[in-house]
Image 1 (cartoon, rainbow, N blue to C red):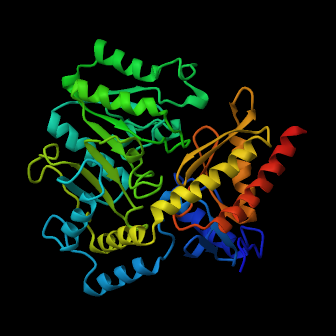
Image 2 (cartoon, helix red, strand yellow):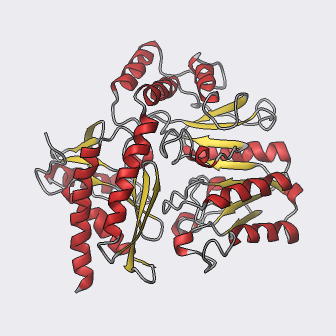
Image 3 (cartoon, rainbow, N blue to C red):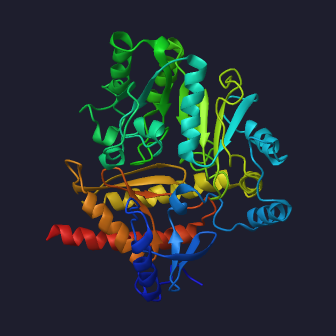
Length: 443
């Protein structure tokens, strides 16, 4: 069967009925890109309640790295389900937790000897990283980058700046210092590489010289690739950033919630640049969608005392069994290599579209994490958020799932299992949507 397969223009009648019920009971804070109601999924194909079948170019928000319902993952979860669903992480433990820690210790950057804390989500994993850093350093100031998205819990949110609505009316930690992220396509400092010499890091160093004491810094938080926009810093940025943190004795807290577990063709995105963080966070991409957050740190950094931090549901055996299966699947099916190979093909195809349509500004990516800038004018690069939204919506109605992120970027992050024929089929749909929107803007 060829995909995608649209039997009724979404949302169909069954979906509309469920959406009406959901609108009555759900919190209005939830903002969904599509009026879609999904029923089932298998590998890279998602089916809605009306029988439409979509190519998943989003991996359910970058989580389903080994595809939906991988048989190895399902089997592992079924076997554990028959044994038991949970017993408090703070009361005792299942043998799966140290097994998972041992497996992760072989792939987390920096060699063996890491310590691990388990929670339920990326936000919680990042929050635990902040607390571990503060405990170890006794520092009260956190450094970060503008435009980052670390989560919606209050500590993580304090270091985030993707969208104003995320922080509106909510309290924030007071001692937060953020500097521009190296968004070279749309440089916040109005500079160009290589002449600027990564001016964003000059600004960070200026803060450390004038108004922030290194001894009072708990950590510097970094998304290796900006999740809101798929922004990839230049090579020189990473080398200089790590040198800067080491010179000032500042811990590097890496948020690999989106970029980890093979997404960029390496186990972790920082592996692409040879950077070893002091603390690293991942979430449900490790457990194929089951609630799981993991905070990894050097043993000498994760030195907090018993009861200083805990999680009732952290290390859940169902999520842990799924995570162990995910790691095996990625190795045995060579999915890191597939992510690299298919990502290059996909990026090349998208870059060809940039040269073809004036509403596209840039295509950039690493592995199977790719962003496509939608603009009002290719010369100025002025963001076009409505154009990006319309392309995503038209693509969904034709059978491809993706997300809009940042100012006006469409983010593509399909499962690492995706094949070239599925990529080509999805990109045909995406191009048809781009063409339609481009025609509308040319009138």
